[in-house]
Image (cartoon, rainbow, N blue to C red; front, side, top):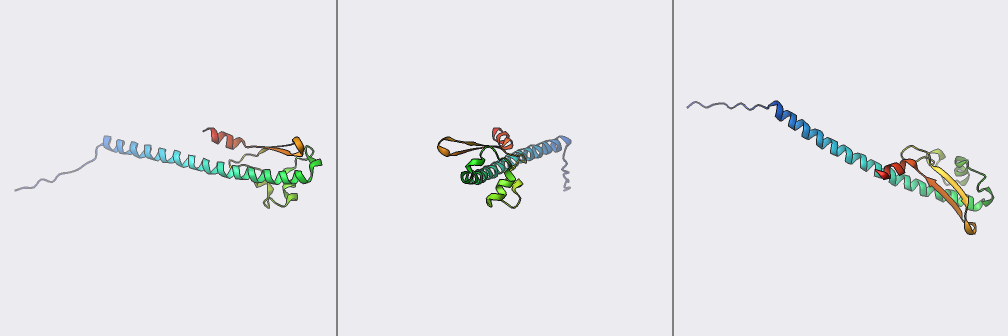
Length: 126
């Protein structure tokens, strides 16, 4: 008896289908990875805002006469002694944009500090 050798070959359509499946899976993984990165950046930005708010609250609680007159944030952070060695790192969100900071006298002598992050606001919308 003569045995026939079967030749297996891959058609062009099969190769295209496999490539499409790989591309779809890769795209889904990339999107998931990007979302995870954005969540991490949001978390780090929120932590940075809390730290910055604490530093400014302490500073302006000790110097209430300077509310509204000072906005040299790097110098204030250096004077407080609570910030990082390079205060500019604390003044940017993890999306690379500078915080918008506002300090106002509030009711009953409480300092009101507003810190906005455009990068975090954009990421939260998506």
